[in-house]
Amino acid sequence: MRDFNLKESNKNKYIDLGERGKLNLNNKLNDLTGKEWIKFSKSWFVHRPPRRKENEILHPAKFPESLVEEFIGFFSKKNDWILDPFLGTASTLIAAGKLNRNAAGIEINKKYYQISLERIKNGNYENKIIPVCGSSLDMLKLLRKEKLLEDIQFDYTITSPPYWNQLERNSIRQKDRKQKGLDTKYSKSKDDIGNLDSYEEFIEIQAKIFDQVFQLTKPNGYLTIITNNIYWQSKLYPLAFDTAVSLTKRGEFSWTLKDEKIWLQDDKPLIALGVNNAWVGNRHHQYCLIFRKEV
Ligand SMILES: C[S@@+](CC[C@H](N)C(=O)[O-])C[C@H]1O[C@@H](n2cnc3c(N)ncnc32)[C@H](O)[C@@H]1O
Image 1 (cartoon, helix red, strand yellow):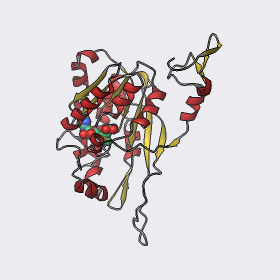
Image 2: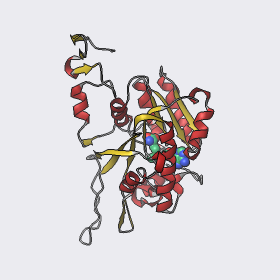
Image 3: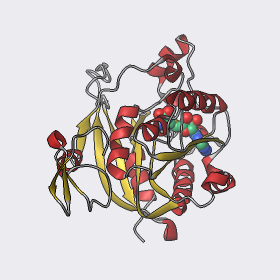
């Protein structure tokens, strides 16, 4: 193990990693100590991302690498393969590279794909890090075409799909981004699932993409989807809940829903919504849905 003064406390089973705790050499899932495992198992966490750098602000909804790192660290081991079918500007691939995992991701928007290439080049990672430009609706074809990936089965997928077409509807935030000359939608492509108008169609097409992830995942491999419920025109669309349920009803490609972890965003300002009139909540949390391929 890197960077640690190792002391074997039990020849057969454990390595003492000092402050980190003890690493069980029979740990099937990750390279964490028991102490670190228990810490991650809490059903909620607060995460305050560092300020985004210039080329990261361009993207309307990037998740922080520091958050993805924690999930990849828990659900995979060194040199495992990680997948992200909605790559954006490559947060998942950067986190995977930092943690010595191999990784591939697909992004439909050429501009974000170019930013990804640049960020990955600057990272000088030792493992294989493969961004692909295209639609995840063609994921099986796209990844199997890549020579390197022909036989690869992924150990873990973590991703954040578009939150239906919420970007177009979130008018307060959009006004601010428009003024700053930043993107207010991901792309104009008809295959961009953030451009689907029908909620029901979105749930179905999104599930079809995760059918393909299922086929590319090793038995017992995990999937984490970061998403949220959406408030629109005085009504809550239970996108996170419908996503959770929809993936468990896919016939031979059905995922097993294992849990949710709730990301609490206590660094967002409260906005006056519906005051003196009717309930409108300040939604300052997101859902990290955890699935497993159990066959
Ligand atoms: C919520 S963002 C993901 C952001 C990413 N996690 C990051 O940190 O940069 C969703 C991404 O999915 C992309 N997308 C939408 N439809 C897609 C499709 N059919 N195939 C691949 N990417 C798609 C969008 O362009 C957008 O960049």
